[in-house]
Length: 101
Image 1 (cartoon, rainbow, N blue to C red):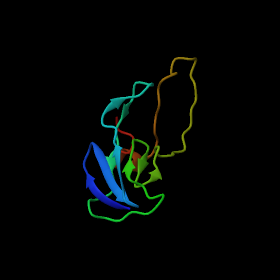
Image 2 (cartoon, rainbow, N blue to C red):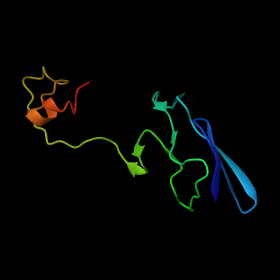
Image 3 (cartoon, helix red, strand yellow):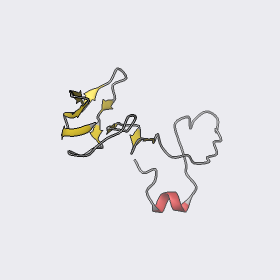
């Protein structure tokens, strides 16, 4: 098919004498009270193939699953007083602001 129109609200594509409008979710609340948002990854006038990624969501970047970063951590409780505390011991993680909240 071929992309006829794309913006933040929808993607319209044509193929086999049919036109298909695909709505995109923009800043909607999910059932778990998180924000759902989709960004188009195709451009107007481009041809697409079956199975090609049209839009990215919160958990994907370029069609690849992107749920976070893995890091090796150690946890040692101290008499039950530090149940929600965390310490990262890595200069690279600190200097590159990998886990800054």
